[in-house]
Length: 337
Ligand code: KG4
Ligand code: ZN
Image (cartoon, rainbow, N blue to C red; front, side):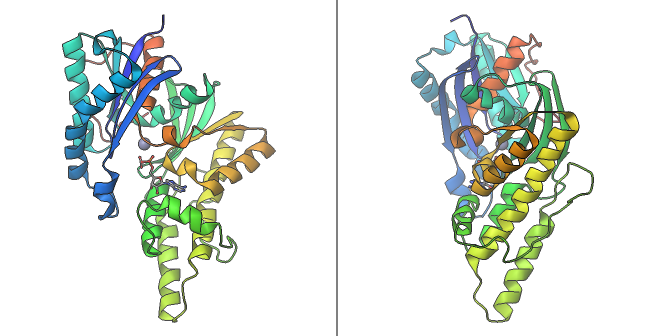
């Protein structure tokens, strides 16, 4: 094939991801997750994640190469998440990528994790239209991006000022004694609930910004549950889950559609673990259809952290002819887009 073979390495949070792509073709995508090791803490423990990356990195590279049917010597370029993410976790991936780049004498490209979440859609639905608005919702981030070009022109329109959307799901699940990670069990519980049973606050609603806030919502749910318990009432878990989920989906989709309208954009990409949320997807479809915007959501496996997203973005960066990163490439826990 004429297209360069890109190896992508992701290690910004609790997933060790390695993938191989050529252009929009995904050859292999291997992920080793330490999520089970964090479950009893109710959130990712950075030190635990770093150690897990260290153990998983080399075997995951080997497995991915085997699956892809490629030899490492065939690799044309190595892309790695340089940030944002956890400091120690990022360091493991970047160090590994540097070692491979040096050993194979191939160029290294440090790329942005958030933009990777958008680029990955190309592996599923083909080349992205330009421009797109991207809503990234996961346990670590909640951001709205205006993407005119994946390699060269990405603008942050807004982001959460406190908790990430997935973090809110995880915290509310805990309040309701549901397991971690909290998104899937809340999504399931909400199916039997009435979203209008309780009206929870929509943080930063109608403030004219594209920023989000979920800590007030989490506090409101905590207070509501406490009040019910003090009054000796059973907590109606399905109703609380449905009302909470409605508050999250409402504000996310409202601002995403507003951004499309303001910038004359006709395509919205939703990615990140929370993109799997059934209510978010349905509401986004409805509101986007009404606004003449097409929604693209990669399959769940590609929405969560993985090496494919980094390899997909690496392919764009190489195709754009951008210069490689130096071998002393630094990690940046809050790398801007
Ligand atoms: O992208 P991801 O796997 O990891 C990072 O955080 O980077 O996202 C995980 C988050 C968790 O907070 C999880 O609760 C949430 O995605 N999540 C969901 C659903 N499935 C996963 N949130 C809402 N509804 C879901 N169906
Ligand atoms: Zn992510």
